[in-house]
Image (cartoon, rainbow, N blue to C red; front, side, top):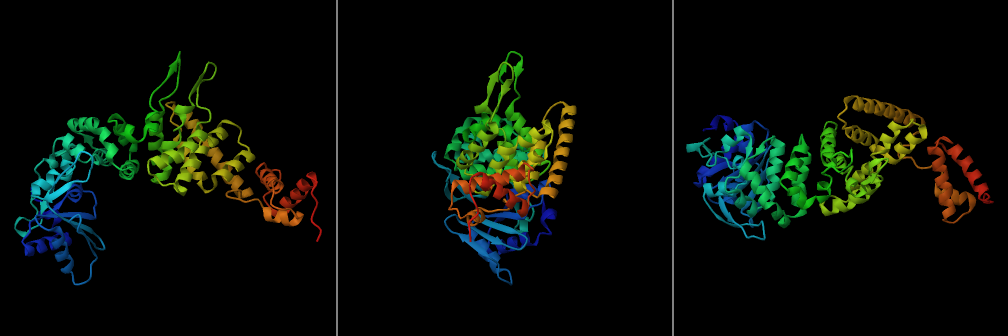
Length: 473
């Protein structure tokens, strides 16, 4: 196969090829760019392999421009990178690799193009296009990667036990590519995942969660999680999610499978957002159901308090998975803690005070919370789904009305603790906090409006009830 027409208009590829000819080096475009070219997917990252020094080729390319281009050289790895306005180019010499059992860091030696292709993770990523003038556009495909692209198959170029044992992160990449491309994993390759799943223990949490997040950001992340679950990869790093799977029954009373429910919620939320952390909130919203599960003869299966327990579990899970422990974790934690609140409003008569409290606690994330709750409606009964979603519409309308009238989103009580201390001559104390809290509660309950004048009036009443008088000037 010759792909010269497909790359003929890409000036940077022709420039690199010309520089390689001047140095007398065989040079190729390899990997993901070739795969995406054949799949007609956009890509701005190009990897070049030459039989010789990749650094020397990169320097020659950088010098070929009539203006300065940024060149980064990584001598320890034998690689170099050039960043242009539209492209990111990476250069490496062809190499072969060997691995120790306890490390994914290879022993690297110079090699042939074929040896370089053998070390690639999958056949669809082991494709190479010659860019030398004499053979420009010729496709080098020793492992039938083009055929696997057409078959929509993820397959290792070598025996999967070799590929995955050498670098276990490739197992996560297999699931990630299958999810992103909507491909199947070839049966022998999938069996290799099962046999080598425990090898993930030598991979850092940061590398694992980086691949996991790419799966979560795909169009249908449930597919990736099902692959992770069946292959036992998920068991290695996220057992709390694995524990969601399964159905218990007592007599004729059963609960739903919370693992597959969670995956449905995750797919549902993807229709609303591509925000990674809202998607994480969908993953975490029922994470505490296994530890809060109880059976009662009258009520059947219950999961009382799973939202609060889940919120307490969130920091521990984020820390273990090497996810950020900053405002992003707190955002997920908040949505986990509050995810039942709008549902309770749906079930009960919607009161202004209940809506005020929800808006106050959710703050700027109230719309995300409502989207999470909509995604959480996964009943197989279409009439029930329709009824719930219609009720959510009513709740959202009520939120808008209360917001316009009371402005309680992210509000602070109109009277501060400092003002209370100054007016009554009080030191910092429990009493000051109680007065401030009672003013806030009165606003949320609708007993007074959210304004300074009414808050001051209530403050004096509360102080009088506690036997506190205004400080004399």
